[in-house]
Image 1 (spheres, rainbow, N blue to C red):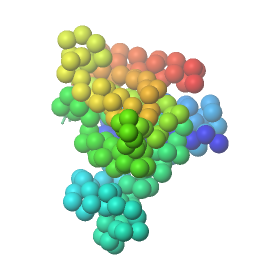
Image 2 (image 1 turned 45 degrees about the vertical axis):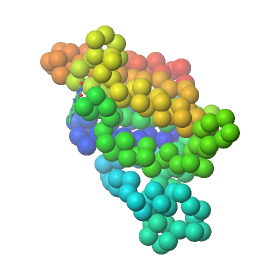
Image 3 (image 1 turned 60 degrees about the vertical axis):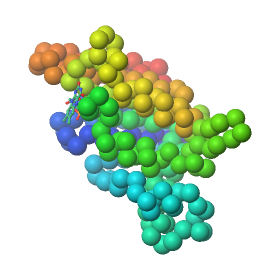
Length: 204
Ligand SMILES: Cc1cc2nc3c(=O)[nH]c(=O)nc-3n(C[C@H](O)[C@H](O)[C@H](O)COP(=O)(O)O)c2cc1C
């Protein structure tokens, strides 16, 4: 059975646009493919910032780790397992100070692991999370998909770079943007996102 991993990061619960649209997309994919849906809510799962114990632990084989180091990477190991087991990954985030929610940044810090999700070779780094497709759902007060705001969009280029580094080259983005420009603009943005979700679900 194929597997879909849904990663949500907004702390705004039912008010969150990225949570809502990313969940809708992942549920549609799961329903049409009869796939297993694994949900990783990064507000429910609070990840520690990378610290000295973590960085020491990921640089040595599991058998050489202290008990404290083993504990520091246990959740990271689980998150890597979830990522590697998925065929499709749906990631939701708001555009936060021109980038992503810090909870999602922490998830990336926990899944980008040398030897597990990427490896260094003579020819440079190679991603090990190959053959997967990722969908990004980005909610933003302003407009960043095109126009004058695009150069300030560090969320989509960053996520595409890091996913590509891990070997995930196929990435599609759904924007829910311009939601701060009044209720009418917000309604239009949500309707456009629903339409995009329906289109992607049909194409999948
Ligand atoms: C701390 C903070 C920083 C934000 N920074 C930006 C920003 O840089 N650009 C923008 O257009 N909107 C910004 N917003 C608005 C969010 O992108 C918008 O509310 C979006 O809907 C958040 O995603 P969510 O609904 O999934 O939580 C910010 C909101 C917060 C709370």
